[in-house]
Length: 99
View: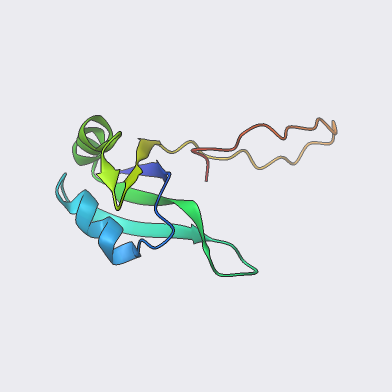
């Protein structure tokens, strides 16, 4: 099972529409569009879980395709580190593709 990061999503896209898009590449286990906690609006990215082979196919064939006028960016999601140390290092870099 792989979790995919899906970036550059159209603001209006629903989880059902995103599931339908990825279903063309194989079996979709879960879909989540990330929303702003204050406004409830889409933040323009989400995550899709699929079987490994289907996920690889989605990355190869789906990345760069248009969905509702937006060119999608699809990558394997990278787990976000859960900092517990105390060195105070300040990251702040682009957290794209991380969950």
